Amino acid sequence: MPGKVSSKLKREAGTLKQAIGAVVTDLRLKKEWAQGKLAVKVGYSTSWVNKLEKGKVNPTLELVIALADTFGLTLSQFFARVERKYQKGRPNRGFVKR
Image (cartoon, rainbow, N blue to C red; front, top):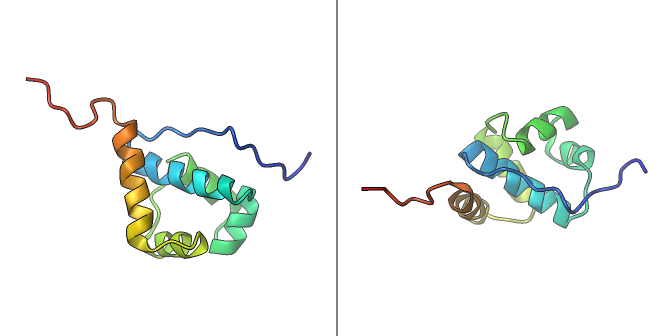
C-alpha cells in the first residue's frame, strides 16, 4: 500500500549524523508521516530526507530549525533527543578503558 508508514523502523545512532537521523525518523513515525510529507513540510526532497534519516548527510542549521519547528520542539529539546539517542548508540557509552 503506497504511503503506509512502518512504525518498526529502527536507525543506527553511533554517530551524531546517525543520531540526528534516528531522531527525525522517530519523530516522523510518531506523527505517522511518510518521508514525502516531511520533505514537503521542511522544503527538501524526499531523497534528501531519506539520506538524512539514514545518517548519510549533515543537516544545515536552517534545516534543524525547520525540523524542530515542524515537530513542535525547541532547538534545545530537539538536540536533547539527539544527545540521548547518540549516548545510547555509542558502543562504549562514554566509558574509557584503562
